[in-house]
Amino acid sequence: MTATTPSDMAISDRLAQLGADADSDRVSLDWILKQLHERAFGLFLLILALPCCIPFLYGVPQIVSLPLMFVSAQILLGRRVPWLPGNLGARTVSSEGLRGLSQRSGPWLRRIEGLSKPRLSVLTTTPMDRFVGAALVLFSASILVPLPGTNTVPGFAVVVVAMGLLQRDGILVVLGSILGTAWIASLLLAGATLISLLKTWIGL
Image (cartoon, rainbow, N blue to C red; front, side, top):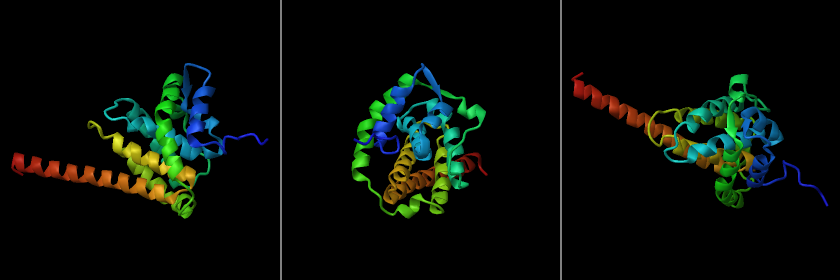
């Protein structure tokens, strides 16, 4: 009987194992990164983005958005193995929170896994993945916008793109990119409208 390796495991199962392997109350982002092996880019993006999908959650999205941007930029630059500088890698999350995240997200991830398959895989490999990295940088940056609920849509977009990268499913990458781009466009439109209203109000 062939043993199941981390690279062969379903994504939802790999996240569950990650929570089970945590042997202290809190684990660092560096520790998480070291557990992910060759699937590190996609899984790390997924783990960081999942908390951002929770509506009206404050604090956590702002903590993970910088590591998200940093890892996404490495995809843009063509790195094959992700890396975090000391100050970002030392950030910690609770092991209980990691296990809870796995339990809550598991059913949804399994649904996506059931629907996804390798297709349009060229979008998930070099050099096309660099364009994906650029998009992920923008989506991750928009999580920092200090408005209620602004973390949910870009967080979900990053999750879908990350699942696409992990499953070699270019359709998921496209869907996530469309969602994230629409969100960025809506922010720009809302900002332009607000500026126009302010100019009118103050008589400029």
